[in-house]
Length: 167
Image (cartoon, rainbow, N blue to C red):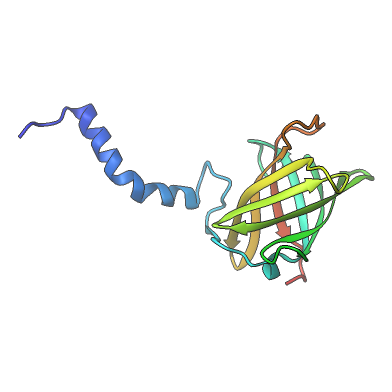
């Protein structure tokens, strides 16, 4: 039987343990946007997404407390797509609010929203994960300008947290 050299042995071991360890690394911890003690939700029905959400946007890679923009999002069941939601989004700071419409869903742990400033053309796309944290639903991810759109905002990290009192 031929023995493996140290580098080849390390690669072989990594290939064996990666499928076991990678889901744990993705689930939480330092260096991720998933707070410790939180778990990714595979599916969130529209009824759980409905209601009022606080929105915070920040530069990618910056700490969560360095908010660039903030606002409110109100989601309700989409009348045409039974697994989806839609609603108005208000973003801004210092009295400079701007409105958009959004629609989306959570399927297989992935959160997706399409944002439209004019109600017809997609101006930004939101993608992220729905998280269960201490009994509360939180959604984190990235908001990017839609392809082909000359947008004033770069890609930004987002966090949606339920407004207290909404269920």
